[in-house]
Length: 323
Length: 279
Ligand SMILES: [Mg+2]
Image 1 (cartoon, each protein chain N blue to C red):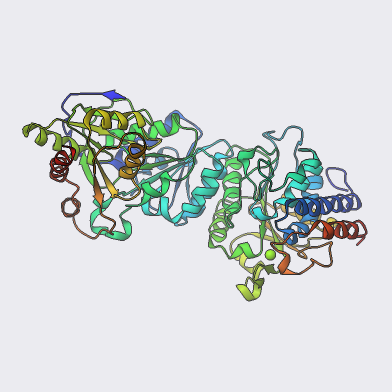
Image 2: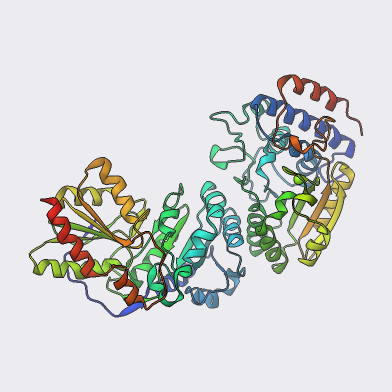
């Protein structure tokens, strides 16, 4: 587990899909077997750099996501490393049975990019807001599920998905510009959580861009004399059990935060572990088992309670339960 | 006579052995899909003993032709053919569907069966996988061919047509799909359950070269595959007219035998009947 206590500064808001696109182009430069498959929205999910730099390794397959997953499996069985990306709602959910059988049961190194994840996709509304993808992807045997915290980390995560994993990977990223605050030098190791700030009153385990909200919450809590540990759980599966159990033992209370349904995602994964090994009071920040709606990303984050202030409120409530 | 040196008469005898092994393994298993497995025995013998370039003693040989069985439920036909070709001992066929067996009810590569290219069983996925394999082979300038096998009922899955579009878009002349056109599926006639005709026109309009054959005439099957292999610029599909349950009168054309298996007593009678087959 990486440990850091430095302050993180926002270098400027960037969509995490930009990191995916940069990582894909870099991975393509490093590895000649890397193939990208597009389902009509290649620019919109950040695959266009790769497609223009390596046209002979980019294949357009049209609006046919199931076929994309099957084709990726056939390529992986033939020694290629295929990366397929489309909106998360389609990448993970329209294709689930193809992913389950052709990718996971065959245990193939296929990388599936779930773009436009979470409610922050905004005005497009509920149909396009992937809020169940982590839940569905993480129950599939052999699957690795990655949800990086900012654009810089998304680039590293794609490279790690290519270089550190040998089986299926679901990599989740978003469209809305969000704070880009990690450094290139913060090494990305699949399955190893990053403790971005140490603390011992409460532990906030967050994923995706809610990690930034958690860091903001930690500052507010510090002013109230509450010491919060902030963990970036960039890999949902395999989950870093050690980081979670240390949080339970050393902080005695845990908040999870994710831009996803509170049922089945990161919160559930953390609860499944601690309920068996070291139960402590918990609060979960996320979508409360409902569909999203149209609105600006910030408005939706406010309405559905995924802000730093919601984490602060949850922490204050939890500290009462803890005593 | 074909590339591997087997005459049509020899292929006919091999098909009989495959049919008998299908019956024996299913009777031993106590469950499984008899009708479709028997109906494809002639196609399988032609592929593994006539058409495909493969090495049973070196299953992972990179230059091998690939056989993608999209309809995993006819696994007994695939297993009997692999055993007949020498990938593993024929006695192992009796472990079909049993705990710990390499012969899963639907093919599963995680159990380590030599010669098995794909874990499959959910219909409508195999053609996409075959397309991916054909695209990769073409990219690398590899000369091997991809063969896939599909049920006619399976063509009702929309994903088949997504895959069909992509195969012609990428001019996959190294891909040949075969349709087991027995006209039946679990609920009855394919045309009643959900019409497939005009089937050849559908494939032609999707940009495929269509070949028809009698799926129980070895010479005809070999000729169909030979034509597919020399067809340039587009993928080929062979519509093989077959009889579900071919070789056992009691099973032939009875869709009730799609998902049924013979009892040990029935198996003995059926094996004798197959021995006496001489069409
Ligand atoms: Mg049929």
